[in-house]
Image (cartoon, rainbow, N blue to C red; front, side, top):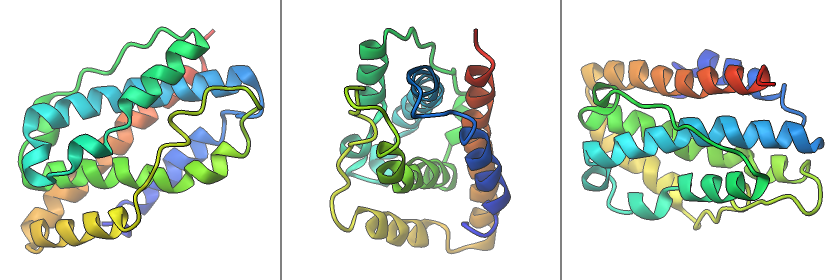
Length: 174
C-alpha cells in the first residue's frame, strides 16, 4: 500500500509543509485542517465498524485530542462529513486506518517546531510500542487478495484526499 499511495502521501506532505508551525497562526491552521479531516473520518470509521476490524480502534482515535487543541486555540471546527461508502467494508476500513495511523510518524518531528505554550495534545499523543507493526500485521490478513488491495489503494487515496481538501482550505482561510 505504501508504494501504491506514495504520490498521494508526498503531495499531502508537501501541502502541509505550507503550514509554518513555528508561527502561532500557522499552527492554528494546521490543527484546524487536521481536526476537520480526522474527526469526520473517525466518525465514519466508527459507523462502519472499525472496532470490529481492529479491536483497539477506540484507543487509537486522536480526534478528541485535535478537538481539545482546537478549543484551546479558539478554533471553530466543522468536521468534513464523510460518505459511509468511503469506508464501507474491511478493505476500505483498513486503508483509512493505515492513513490515520501512519500520520503519527511525523508527529515527533513536527512537535519540535511548535512554539512553547501551544496546546500539544494531538502531537504528543502516545503511540504504544508495537502498535504500528500490529496494524500492519492486521492489514496483511485483510489485504491478502489483489482485489482487496486494489479497493484499499483507492480508499487510501480518498482518505489522503480528505486531508488535502481541508489542508488547502485552511491554508487560504482568512
